[in-house]
Amino acid sequence: MSIGGIKPKHQRLVLVVIALVALIGAGLLAAWALRNQASYFYLPAEMAAKPPEQGRAVRLGGMVETGSIKTEADGVTIHFIVGDGKARIPVSFRGIVPDLFKEGSGAVAEGRIGPDGTFVADNLLAKHDERYVPREMKDMTAQQARATVAETQ
Image 1 (cartoon, rainbow, N blue to C red):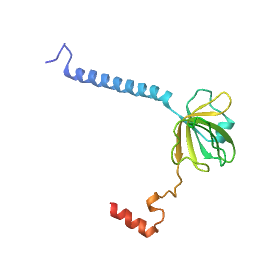
Image 2 (image 1 turned 45 degrees about the vertical axis):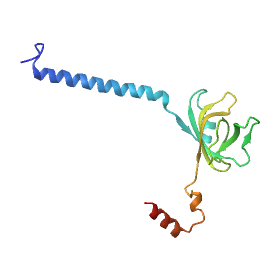
Image 3 (image 1 turned 90 degrees about the vertical axis):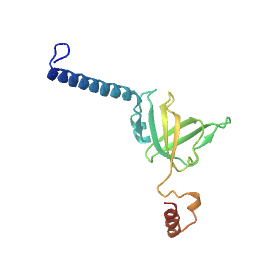
Image 4 (image 1 turned 180 degrees about the horizontal axis):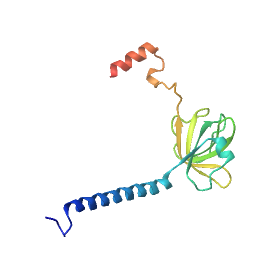
């Protein structure tokens, strides 16, 4: 017996079609929402050659140049230069600076390019190199470090 005069075989087909349409709709909605959230990554040379349009959220990654970090009198605004050996981009950031942020280290700034060409960062991420060693293990030999790691597992 069928409900509403539709055979069970057709009811299943209608349910499959409805589920498929809902799934495609959800996928398109998610893709449209993420389109505005995508943050493109630029190296200084790429940003200098072809800067993003003003107001567009992007990420700028490179090395913080030695001697370029300047802190303003308010204590929370810093200016520095990010370079990659080919180009240099001035960056301005207002906020709490990560502990690993220092001259000569890698950094990723998330923000927008300003009208004067300065990159205005909303968020600042510091990168450590692959030779990072925790403070507690700095003076250990490789064998002592392996033994300490083995004890903690």
